[in-house]
Length: 621
View 1: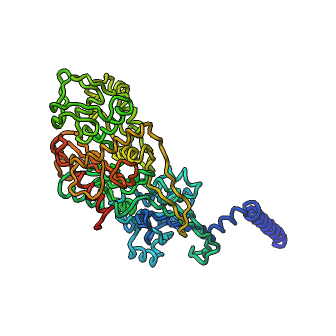
View 2 (view 1 turned 60 degrees about the vertical axis):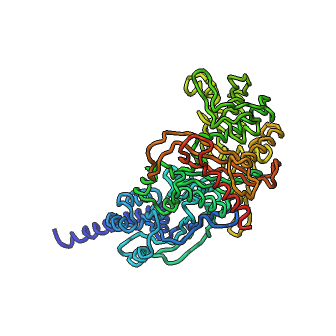
View 3 (view 1 turned 60 degrees about the horizontal axis):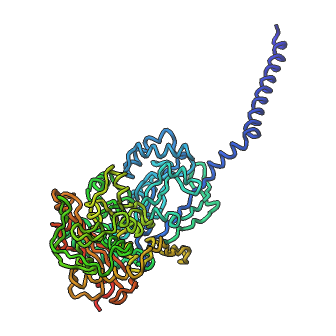
């Protein structure tokens, strides 16, 4: 075979090979540009253009006089864009970052990987609390060692007087996976913060702003070149509360003084306007610092709070229930008066300090002699109210009965949450014979009626429920829903929401009977049962002492458990009369504050009440 014969065949084979290659390239180019062109253009665009959220400042929280309770301060947030982290460098990056932001490497890796699945082109925050400025500068200056890492300024939540207001204001914290799943369509991001407790939680809808967006162009090295588009963020609304910072601090200072003097181990103080339900002050002590949660609480710090048997994380003003003691005689008295079992002139002759029913004795704190209604309430005679409730076994005087007491108790708000705009409110217990049968499978006894009459036994209330009941008497018969929201303002200071008073019900009690209770409450102070030396205001109210547990052992703070607590619930009318004009009412509750069960034992709540009212309403005048 000659060389000249082989050359055309080789040329033909080469030509066919070239044609085949061109066909393959053409098909591939068709696939890339026509069939899958839109997909690859989108991928290229995503590599070139990135859409980043523009954070919106959370609204601030203010007292009624615009004193700041919660604000935003500058800080630095560390985030990672998963698409910018090479797989070969992820482990090293995770280790480096975890040391700088104070998190476990596994947690940082999990956050990055979860975001890689959700949307690898959007950043995920890996710092749970603000990093120091030096760390932010380190990360910014050594980007080559931290691929995909972003340092962004972000407003961080700061609570002024955190311990004082924590039970009311609450705090914010990272959104959970479940919460994000239900809120993502409303603009939440997976690394957002959300109101966890208190006002921060209840009014999240007002406080949270609306995120904006920034579209940026990047080069081949993923460095930002320029901003292509910007949609500004809208800050959240500013929430104005009904609280008065001056009164709040007066109340807290008095309670702290009592704690320091070892007069009691825990305390609650609440002040409200009886004419509209506005909460003017609310102190629950001991408390906690909500800044710990906003900035990232440690396991040790959280463990200490949870182990404290004084329950600092609970707002005891609304979330704990206690026996009301003699303050509950308000309910027993109104039930007896309104049902015709007693009048102003009903006299009970308390000749000794106990009455006997079969083998049982029911005690009073002294033998008072003959008492009418005003005298029975003012002197807080237990036997007088045993008689009004269950009758007298010797004289045959009839009582109103436990069903009526429970009926009027519920009318005044006991046994159900008040509906205040704060989370974690307890319902309390307003017992009756049916309740006891259902709960204990036992019949009601005369002893149960006597104990109920004086706020012991099964009766349990929150401090707010008790205050709200007295407020309804002080204002002439309207039970308002307590509230802490006053207004919401936009970022220019314009009012967008105003909270209106909300009536729960008008209580079905004759005005004359309410007036008689107001007169009796004033006599509690004027006869010296609630001693207020040189009082400068016409304070009216009712004392209470209740037994709640064993008088032995110590609490988490090392204070003796005394087994008793004290109440004083009060109000101040505009003039020294029985008109329903009071614009301030207050309850002081002190826990572990009496060494003996007696009405003459020192009740620190009375003196505290006088000092607060006079400092707030009179001052140095």
